[in-house]
Image (tube, rainbow over the protein chains, first blue to last red):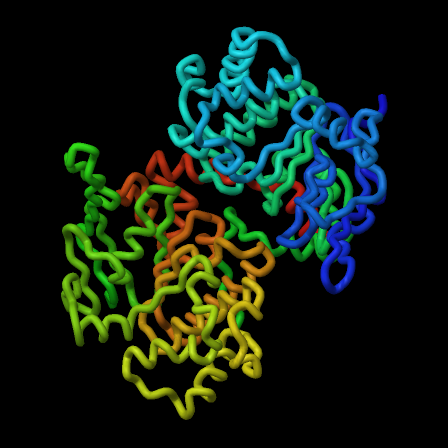
Length: 269
Length: 270
């Protein structure tokens, strides 16, 4: 079976007053159906730009070259109209801050319903039923009533569940999750990670999970891409990257993680 | 020796509803703890647990609704004027976001000397020499003393914040999520710096954090807060190794961990 997502020699260039700057350089990886690939890096590593390039959501002044194919469709060569078709339908994205991705003036049910009908059409009543089902699937209690509430009426963890419901309402084959648990408390983070893993498994979609947190990546990804300053430092199975890192930078990152299970060493004077 | 004693500290915030009805919210509810000279006490909790409100009360940036605060045996709960100035000379704060807590239009030298100016303390030697000495202590290039905060990276800016806290030679430094905004490699360096500075100067830290793994690397004792109360307080070894409270156990279990087998193999190769 062919890969779901193929990224080959992806380079993202910003044109600045001082000339072009490559923020992503020659990055290549694939995502199979039914797997999670983690992209990990510190700030400025280019991990978010990589995901925005896949979604065709690069900011003004940025250009991507190389190859991005989703299920055989050329994403980089797609017209704006074709991209709008792909987004939300065959690929979806969730972000760190759900509040900035939701419109405060509309109920969450209506927002998901609009997205669904834009892609699938059909009656409002039919869409409403799908929306309530999606909200139930992400574990939101009392979804019939809660669909009529506004974004501010939910907690941070619930809002992220709503974003996930919105991302999955059209059953995409690829979900890109960009730091989806970074703003959440650790107990809520554990629930959301569990939910994403379960939903991915049930639906058989592929997932790209972007984070700065190596422990989070190790718990959810089957393969891991380590990025630094726009470059691909290391790419392998999670086991290989964590147990047998090949690159000094990966080793340094792993050595930097504060150990929850290790006691304090003496200060080396 | 007890440096700081918080006794039944309580903070209620009162808001007015649409019809003028008052509603009170108790953010911190009868919190008590001691900070000993030279130790690091961590206060951990999730958002809304009251840990930052507690930090602001013991830093005297916020008046408690009830309870008392003692510093070196003196009641400073309502300290004003000279007594408050003396307290500020002993207790300093390092904040989470270095850029929003450093004046962008002041040079590093001016930022570092500001606490001395407020305190009316003369710097060691010239202002410039003292600023350079502080910069060296926190691992910054002293030749950069006339630069502005925006010319530094996040980790370097946090070092400026730490240097500023040390300018008056305090006995207690309150770190409010001081390493939370930093990349993991930079975070490890700043934690190492904080530990080295304490080792050299013997002051105490109250270390406010949501990240338990970070806390484990720096604290000797830990207070776990939930819904405005301390649910567990003990040595770091006890709280992490043998947590007694149900909430502490939930919190510890929720932390993502790298497969210990992978960790073991990686270390064997190193």
